[in-house]
Image (cartoon, rainbow, N blue to C red; front, side, top):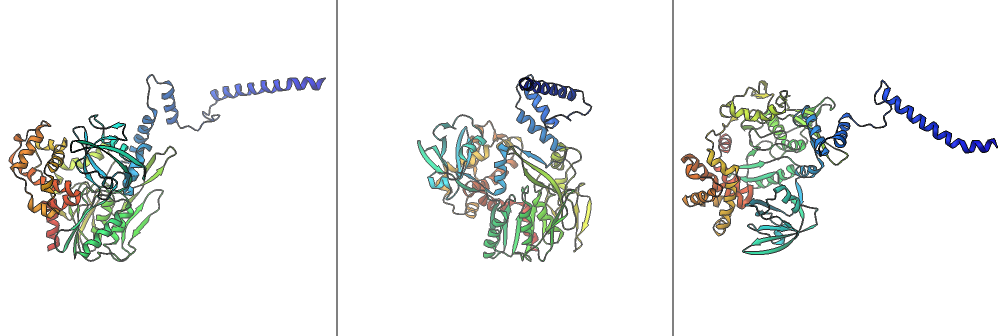
Length: 528
């Protein structure tokens, strides 16, 4: 009988004890002198704040955006180059470093709310499907109308890009008719070597716009082509090159330096010193060499130019480089986003740390380059940032502490375009004019078979000037107000821009270099 009573009341007793235990535990959590001791959650205070905002805040808040901003603000307190990359942007950023992406192979421009095809990659997906320069893309996949709806370029890219091998249907307007096309997406290269050509019978010219996974391979292909053409001297242009992958710059430096010379070394609090040295015989270890740099040459560009300057291997021409001597490593996060964290500093062979100061905050760091224009450095060449001198084996003085200071200075052209002429660039009017004028006079321009032919055969005349004036008036730009100097400057800029329209950057540099002061200085050095 007693056993039966125990069997009946025992479960109820257990329940009462469990409830009492939970109640006592909850009270203890509230009163304990060690907050968080009884917590089951491992959430950080930042995550708790975001959760409370999401549950309690007076207005709706996109907490994902809020969290991203909080992370980025935290990283900005470390250094200017540690960044958080949201998952939505990570693929595009990684594509840049890979040197390719999956798409249809066209370059487009929004022109009065209509997507115009500026260039078509030769033998690319669009070329094979029949898309032509001058086509206007009206719709994508039958349902996505993109003409006349003020769509943003990034949204257009999202529609046209996709998985390699997948198909996208586009409707274009050509010769007064709508034409449908089905394009099979493919791998589209994004070359980091813009151009490689013989600028004189003995001198090669190479422009590198960044350092991605394919840069060294592209560089070697270019070098072999130039050497087959009789190259004995070389100009490497790194202007506008913001950097990229360190190992690619090291490999290129190896082609210019002999033995097992040190190219660069890295070191950080949690990263031991690591030396990058030459490992093979180079293609161009003895030929005369110059490198062009400016205030937008950064990171891996500074590794390359700094190493060659330290070893007295190249003459550096231009203006002081950006000054980024911090090395980032990218880490994947659980939600598909990424963290690019500074883990070390890099040093040139002589021990120069070329990272400019960033102790005055992110804004001051970002504005430092603009300060060079205000204090006259880009005109006079003297720099207060590069104060630490080093001596090369040949006795040359080089500087650290804020970028690579060139051996030969090229001043910035202070005779910049006036306000009205500058608006041609800020509003995109000049590039739109070049495209429009090319389409209207296509038979004339296709008669030029090379950039050299266009450079010698096409000179801007009053006909082009009057056409540009009429075109600019549509954007409320009055070119009757420009100075004679601005007019002459625009006359010079039209031929290289037309060459870019026809041959992309290969054509642009071949024509533009004829009047480029950096290139003229380099040719003079190589001639002496």
